[in-house]
Image (cartoon, rainbow, N blue to C red; front, side, top):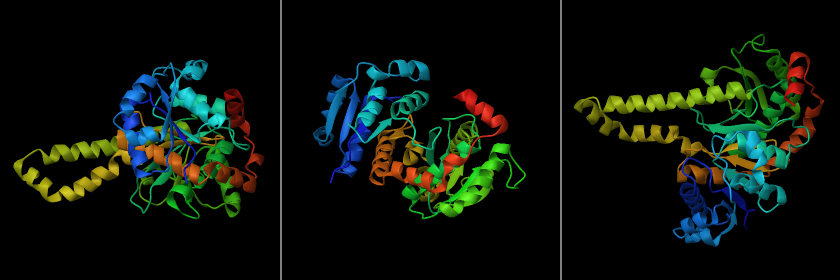
Length: 357
């Protein structure tokens, strides 16, 4: 049985057509049920498909005359959405021509286009960008928001927690993921008013939801395997994510430099190579590629701009799994169960929320 088609923005990312088509082809080889709508420059896509007959047989090409660049502002992208590969891929989801869209293009533009085209689910004020991060535990963790919303109130954080828990149940198989709010300390008195209000709301709602809310977590504990969902505003989340990625690259580069420093070190590298290969695999962002815009009336997956074919294939697999597991309906059901629409922003955060809208 085939899944709904997945629309691929073939022009997005640092490399563009070649890597996006190679990634889709790899995903198709892994999963014969995948069907694709490849959106972009038709001539370039058709030429790239010559090397991938299996993908060609499972794909339709939709010509897009324009491309959104990494420098385009979201407002510029919105004005050109109807003629760009990114905008047309998302519109295919809106029109029912595809079940999900995958793009490696401009994140801000993709968020703006997706939110305008698909709108948010009832009870969700703002979509959140969620991604998987490696841990020392038995499974990856879900972290959100990672940059879609720089300022969030308690209501937003509660909605993020509900969406993140639903996503975690799909990707980890856990019945009640452990959820925590990112904070500067674990004591109940720490953090902003929004964090403390959100914590109280989630404690009260946990009995109605398939999650285990465990209050706060500090940034140095994110990857220890002690939590399954980390919730924060997009400003803090983006900084935390880049700090984690930068530390991973630092460790990898430091090991590489150390092993090359002397003959004894090179011999040591040969002895420890199985362990270093495992480390490399664990830290490679391509193995965790595929961030998701949660809270939309449709599935949109953001691939890292520098992802290789393996990374793109993994992003496609994320989109397919969310379709198969009906993520959107799961989130809607949880929102109804907890009555999240009853939470209202108050005080200063309410003023900021109204100003943002």
